[in-house]
Structures are given as C-alpha cells and as structure tokens.
Length: 208
Image 1 (cartoon, one colour):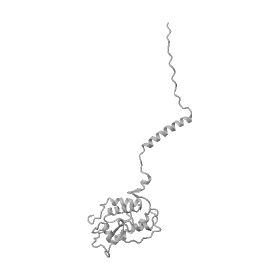
Image 2 (tube, rainbow, N blue to C red; image 1 turned 90 degrees about the vertical axis):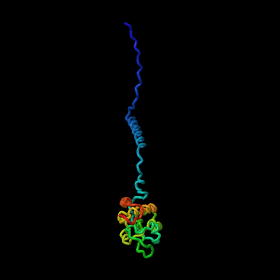
Image 3 (cartoon, rainbow, N blue to C red; image 1 turned 60 degrees about the vertical axis):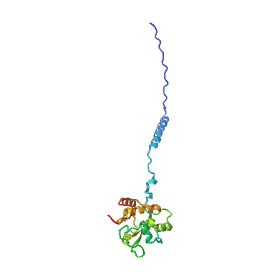
Image 4 (cartoon, rainbow, N blue to C red; image 1 turned 120 degrees about the vertical axis):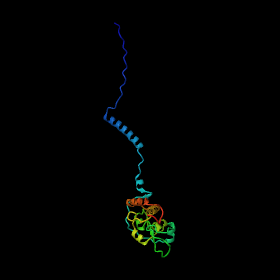
C-alpha cells in the first residue's frame, strides 16, 4: 500500500484580546467617548440662555423696586407731540376729537411708558439723566383725554390697555423700551403680544 503524504497547514496566529479588567474598561471608555463626540457634532444648536431672556430685542426680567424714584422736570409742547403722532384728528386711547392743539386744549401730555414704570424696568446705572431723556422722548409721548391718563397712571400693558389703537401703543412701547434698554416682565410681554395682533401700527379714529 502506498503511503499518502499529507501537507500540514500552518497554524494561524490567534488574535490577542485584552484580558485584564483595566484593559477592558479602557477599551469600553474609548468607544463610548467616540460615540459621545459624534453625537455632540450632530446636536442641534439650541438657543442660549441669553437668547431666551430677550423678546423682540428687549430684556425679559422681573421689575426692580421703585425705591429712589423721583419724577424729573421735563417740557415738551403739545404741538410737537401731535406732530410726532402724525397729527391725527383724535386722541389714540379714547378717540376723543382734537380740534385744537395748544394751551388750553384740555388734553394731557401722556407718557406711553410711564416714568415710574420705566424706573421699575430700568437697567443698571440708570439715574435721573436717562430718566429725563425718556420723559422728553417724543416717541414716548402722546396726547390723551385726562380721564384715560389718570386711569392708565403708572401701569404697564399687563395692568392697563387702551380702548382703541392698542397695536399702535404696543409698537410704541417696544420702540421706546428698546431705545432706552428698559425691560419687560413676562406678564407685560404677553399683554403686548396680544395688543400687537389687535390692529394696525397707526392711530385710527374710526372703526372698532
């Protein structure tokens, strides 16, 4: 019987695996770290906390204490205020007809952002100088029926809203608060949003 010669197959080297607990732990942490890095790259850019405290460019914050408030001396003529409003034939809040503007017209010069409320909403280092500038800012002034002016007093939009032209008033409040870096609290912000949707950004003397 002939002898069959067989060829031996060389043994393949076996892969080496980490055997110690420390080595296994290091390998797992390495894999987890790579996965976290990849997830971080895919994460959407959420708003920053700073962005979340702004509304229409205005700081959203709780009101400050009114301690130290003193109403400043100021003077702006009725005629200048009426011109800034576009010379409408009525007052914005109550649509009281305006037939004459000047001394003895029976109208009040009304701060749209009340000066005391502005003091409550003030930024740091706000004193009598910027408060007087706010008092004489034509954008913050309108002519009003005296009863409406007394009713509004120092309320913000969360505490008082006009019978007419609420959207116009809300736009003015936003303009003034941006310019003077005054804040709104959440209740005022929500009230202003409602007013903004209530009509056009101008004084109208007819309609609802």
